[in-house]
Amino acid sequence: MEIQNKEDRVKISLTLPGVPEFVSVARLTLSGIANRMGFNVDAIEDLKVAVSEACTNAMKHGCKIPKDSYNVDYFVSDKELIIDVRDKGEGFAVSDVETPDLENPKENGLGLYIIRTLMDQVEVKSTGDRGTVIRMIKQLEE
Image (cartoon, rainbow, N blue to C red; front, top):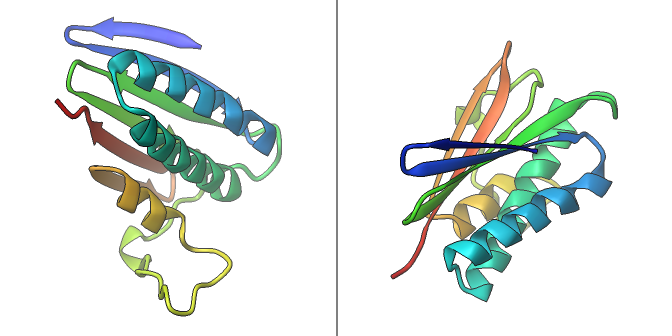
């Protein structure tokens, strides 16, 4: 784990192996950070679900072998939490991601929809040569 402090924002970084057993490390780290910031229990649960979905996407699409890793960066300030989940996969065309049909759900394809539903703001950047970053932002309510 790496911790950096830049001006009004603290950065906490994790590098996790591409195996499901370590998603709990990202969730536990997030829970501790969000609790310390003052998020309520419901918001923390939403954050944990969103991070789990982003980590699952990073493992599924960015880690071809279990020795591959992905990164989770938490940027902490007084008013918001920014979470970046970054993989080193092949990337994808973000514009091709369709809104799921909730009347006829598929087994896969709900991850980004769930993340967008739970977070205040979501940005996805994906390039073929540098992987994918899902940035999730949650404002701390007054």
